[in-house]
Length: 360
Ligand code: CP3
Image (cartoon, rainbow, N blue to C red; front, side, top):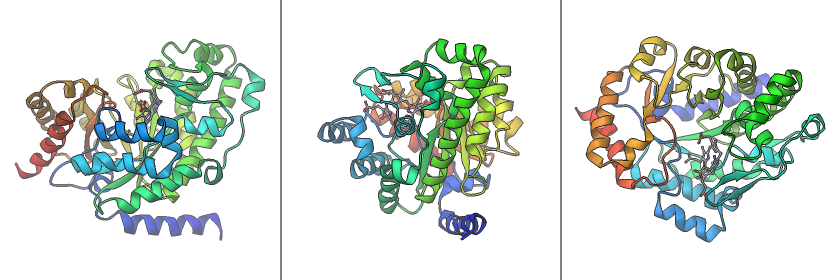
């Protein structure tokens, strides 16, 4: 079969399956009685049932590689809170492991890549990736999860954006300063672009694989690109994200998240995705004024509000919803991930407030 007819078949199957999922309506900017709601990092250490599976599985990476464990923890927040989306339990760094990099997760430290890329030879040695073989456990977890989801709950897939993946691959861990990344970017821009292009091609294939495996929509996470100034974002990170998004247009809605993107909203809005995720520092009302006629907008409560009492969570969520004013295309979410010290009661209060918006 040709690629074009493959795409047409996939599109038809996907749009038939999409019809009863509020998040997919929101991503098409269709009016809804209340905004759909989910939370980044909704599966994780703040949930006792997650801690239990993690203990039995032998750690985070083992869970990611075990489709049954990954499906179970993906479903936990859906069962507990009735959120409108499940996001596959996995990590943006697994494609780097498939490209041949060593990857570890250290308790309390997050990800560690003990042998970060050190130059042109290392970049050239990165392996090409066929997600159906090299990341088959991701597809298996997506299929298992989707089979268990209530019909109105959307299945989300995701990838890290090339710039953020380059940060981890070059820094070997938490890329706070990005000295090696931005050193390479400023000293050897052509080599840096080569790395971004390689990463973009893997991301593109992986996003497509996740859609083929059942993801209803996908999120591209560029966690570190907000540290770039506008010119460097335009010159390096944005074209790499555009390249990563090639190949999924029309197959499933895509959302782009750039943490700390207040100075980059015009650029992020122009990547070609159907949705833009706002971090907590942007004003969502202003973003709707500016982009609401062409993009769905997700966000954007400050995740630290969920460290406060449930009444504060309700009050701040209602304030956020008032800024949106019921405009179509809103997905209620946090501006970043759930913090591990969060009380699950705060998450419940957040979700309930979205539901109450529909009956007000
Ligand atoms: O519920 C979900 O959101 C789904 C799963 C998910 C994880 N990571 C699981 C995870 C998703 C969508 C990610 C994406 C991810 N991973 C990003 C982009 C989004 C963002 O947070 O900005 C980034 C930068 C990573 C890299 C990463 N993985 C870091 C920095 C860490 C350590 C941070 C921490 O909270 O400890 C991880 C580990 C990780 N990924 C955990 C989870 C649940 C914690 C694992 C554990 O110790 O149990």
